[in-house]
Image 1 (tube, rainbow, N blue to C red):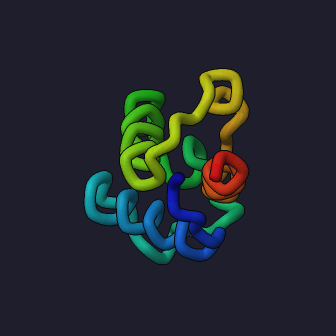
Image 2 (image 1 turned 90 degrees about the vertical axis):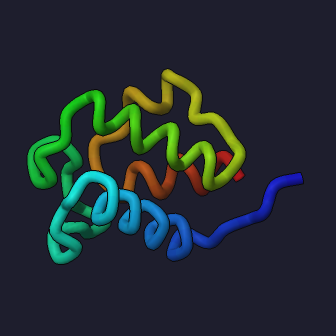
Amino acid sequence: MGTKYSKEEIFEELKNILVEELEINENDITMDANLFEDLDLDSIDAVDIAVRMQKFTDKKLPPNEFKKIKTVGDVVNAVFTLL
């Protein structure tokens, strides 16, 4: 059985990925930040985030849920719901 993470822990892990792997300014990363418009990510970056979050949680985000994700908060909520 997987570990249950809080939304804050998921957010912190996601922020670490965005800062360390994708070189996003930490101050730009908020729950409301749009991944594509505010953080200037592309679809390949989004897939990379999904893969890294899967490794973090040991859960796979279903493709239909993945398509709905627009903001940092959407990622956090989708991952939290999986756990």
